[in-house]
Image (cartoon, rainbow, N blue to C red; front, side, top):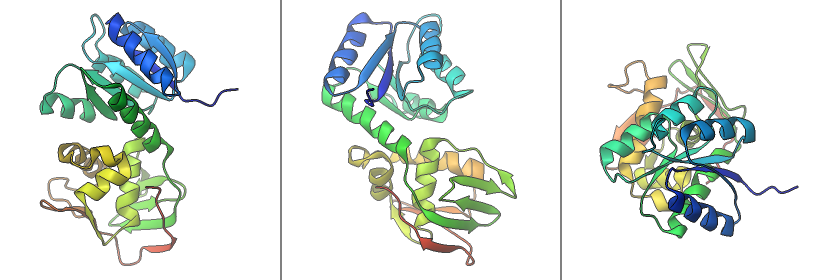
Length: 240
């Protein structure tokens, strides 16, 4: 039985879809395809792919709407494929639940690198530590987050970013360091990308996200996770 990752590629342009399937298959992935939103939703439910490449601009049901419906029941990594190279469009896609984006036209190498990066993030890492910050508790081994005793739901990418920050509590984490560790070296200069995910975490953990006390910004440098003094650790390591 094959263990190669299964990808669902969705695009209403037959040429683009053929290119994605050809190139990704050559790089060792199994690829199934859909040409419209309804087919994409059905295949996502039936086949349970390891990641989804989703065209944004599709007729009838847009890629954003497909992603919204998938996010109602799944945290499968989603990589948006878009012809728009505008920061506002990228940020909107990330805020709505995408794990990454790629702009047409793209090279086969970039396509494969982006897919491998989102799959790598989805695998996570193992730690042995419970970190406290205000009324937030982060169990890094069990991958549980609570705030005021209530469970906090985080996505895979949010968890990996939080994990690296919490493991290094009290230490300044450089922007480039976080981007490289969580997303891979190909993302080391994408500061807007990091800001979006930090904002999402603050919205879930901070009492006042606009005045953060847990995840603090060092302008132009990076971020600092402010843990309580009683936070304890044994062996805290995170997968790069």
